[in-house]
Length: 261
Image (cartoon, rainbow, N blue to C red; front, side):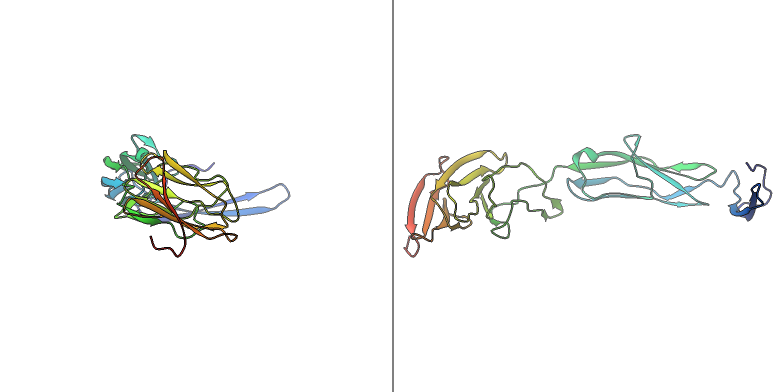
């Protein structure tokens, strides 16, 4: 152990060498560079975090800066408790959650002492998930139902989860008037159903079974009716028309392709 009281002025840099020898005569030399600090060389925060009003899923960024003699150690706090791993001058939460709301402050220290910011209030509003009627939602027949998106600074986050058809990929959905209409993809299979879900709760509104399909295509919604096409290579393809306003999903028509409705 090396101890003592260095002499010099604040800010002076001195080198200390330590030589270690073993019984066989081997030796190792260590050199340390020390910066002398006075008791008044406290770090001073020159930038302090400010409060934020964010929507759920947005990025949270709080910044701080310091003047003085380092090295510096940083620690961020939320609601008075230290945040694990938050030991840098900038605190970043990539997708803020409702649970991240609260009061934040930061403390910076050096070997002499420290400085601490005042509390910054961060509020988090629930994300706006609905942005009007989207007649097509997704990108391909292999769409699985997950569609990360953002609109006007608001992030879309999962509101509910439903299995439209076990073991089948999902065609893109039609989303209209607070409902999601889905038709599962198929490759020479029977036992499939078109379904309607409540967009707010995910509850099943109705299910419409249709015959064996070689392939079928995403639904469209127009004038209160749901349209989708079923292909059967052993028979005439059909266009189904379903009344979407009825909870039972009643079939109104089933026409071979090429007929004028």
